Amino acid sequence: MTKATHTPTVRTEEIDGIFVITIDRPTARNAIDGATAQALAAAIDYLEARDDLRVGILTGAGGVFSAGMDLKAFAVGDAPIVRDRGFGGLTRAQLRTPLIAAVEGYALGGGTELALACDMIVAARNATFGQTEVRYGIVPPEGGMVRLPERIPRNIALELLLTGEPLSAERAERFGLVNELTDPGQALKRALELASSIALNAPLAVRAIKRVLNERQAFRDQDAFAEQDRIAAPVLASHDAQEGAHAFAERRSPHWQGR
Image (tube, rainbow, N blue to C red):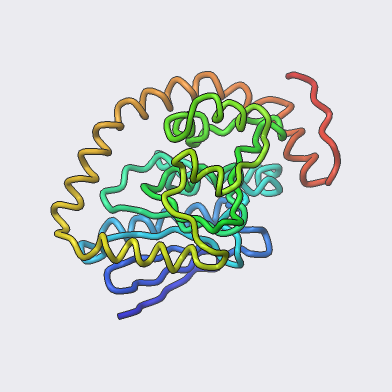
């Protein structure tokens, strides 16, 4: 059985107990603005409210997962943060339902943080991850600094965070960030197969396993986010943060002032 719904920027589809959420802003490389964040939060709430939906998949339209925060929207004060839920309504949420990221193309900045908020990642071989925020005068406060060093070696995480350089899917798979690699265009198909193998199992057992792993990490994540926010808040509110967003929107090099 297949049932589909959509908003202007997020499509959803139910396929035999699997809920596929697709970020649908391909002309903006699926960058997340405020409206898209709210639509994602609503889709996630729907998934969590339905006992018959056993697994979720998050993916992007047009061969791109997500280029992260819409910097043009951010430059005019439109932040893609949902209260108590984080970036895209997902990065600080605690889900009871397993969620798989199906990544094609770019997953940059907040796009990587969305993938990190998922339980598993299936990626095409030509996919690219990266925490590029440092290049725009900001930091990745929605999982990049908290989760990435827990998913890959700390020194590699520091390399990526401090340089803003991309991480290929094949290198990400070697470090354990990616569960499986596929040929280009096949990430969603393989994610559906993986989701189907989970959905066949006893739902109470699946959710109990997810709950134990969530609660094992919850306090550490919450404490880490709280301490990180204390340190990161002055950076995100700085002149340089605004300069980075405006430079991106105006297609010019930023002029950092360190304030």
